[in-house]
Structures are given as structure tokens and as C-alpha cells.
Image (cartoon, rainbow, N blue to C red):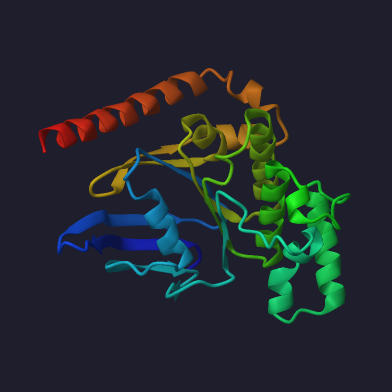
Length: 267
């Protein structure tokens, strides 16, 4: 079976004092190949926990994950991760960072060089191939991180707040790049964000999660990612349905935050 299947996944963390925290409960999702899904929700709803389980960094306490019919039991190159900060190798230049995965996989040098040059062009860094990571801006570093992920040719790209630390203009450019890569490569992309606007722009499928325990609260199928490919994202935000959907989700999350605060104050 193709696609990423999340079957009744729950996650409980044990605490040093003998207690426990139920981070996720009974998550069931079928993510089709080539889908672009954004995951949104208040702090503590288990977004990053879910992403770490999908990456294979954590094993769920119940349920299972499968990709294209094979059970996920740990990290694998078929699932690439882009972190909030690039997690790049400071002692390597841009090209060597991008080619790191294929080198570790024993790919021929000619193949690595060709693929690296292709990816440098895709992310717009063809003039920076020999620059060291510390010489790059934050936005450029995230471009390198995205190219390094693509170099391993994963089936699924997992993105954990990858644009959160960028300034507004750079973030908008990177959002456009994500849409372009999604359309050009046909990769499945799952993106965690705290920004409602970003989730609307980058999620043809958008999940709003509720906390304690983390679970899917509401799901949206949206047109804005498709509209935004190759377009001015500021124009997309002027779409007649963008503002009302944004306000609906903001109110939804605000109500959840208020409920959480009420629980905390009464505890």
C-alpha cells in the first residue's frame, strides 16, 4: 500500500516522579503520496512528538506507522528531516553538506557532483557552492538544509518549524520555494508550524491538533497551496476565503489556549 499510514498511534512519556504525560492519543491518518500537509495547534498538542515518531526518532507506546507498506521502526533515508535550524556541518562548505548523505551511501563521485549542482540550482545557491556554512544567512542555511534533505531522494520530507527563525521577507521567499519543490518533485511533505498563515499557505491539507492528549481536532482541504505555486503569496492572502479561514482557525486555537490556561489556574 502506497503512502504514509498512521494507525492508532499513541504516545505516553514517563516522568521522573513516577507520573506520566499522554502526548498523543489514537492518531489515525492516511497521507497519500505527493500530499503537502501542514500541522498546526497550540503548544503541548504533540505536533513535534508526532513528527519525531514519523521520522523514527521515537517509538510510539501504541499503534504503528507504515510507509508504502513497510513498518517504520527507526530513522531511514526514505524519510528526510528539515529542522528549525539547519543542523548543518559548520566545517564543510555548501556542496559538501548537500552531498553528505549520498557520500555516506557510497554513491559515485560523478553522480554526487551532478546531483549537488542540480540541487544548488533548485534552491538558488549555485553561486555559493564553495561558501562555508557560517558565511551564509539564516535563509541560505535553510536552503542548504532543504537541498541536503532532497539529496537523499526521500519519499517523505518532514519539516519541523523550518522557517520559524527567519525574518518576514526571507520566510515568504522560503514558503514559495517549498511550494515550488513540492510541485516539481512530487514529494510528500509534512510541515509543523505555529503560524496559521503559513499553515494555510503551505497546507493543501491542514490538521489542527488539540492538546492533552494530542489528537486531531479538525482537518481542512485547502486550495491556497495550489494557487500559490509560482504566484505572489501576498496575492494569495487576498483570496476571499483566506481571511475567514484564518480567523476561524485562530479562534479555534485561542479557545484551546484559554481552556489550557483555565486548567492550569484551577490545578
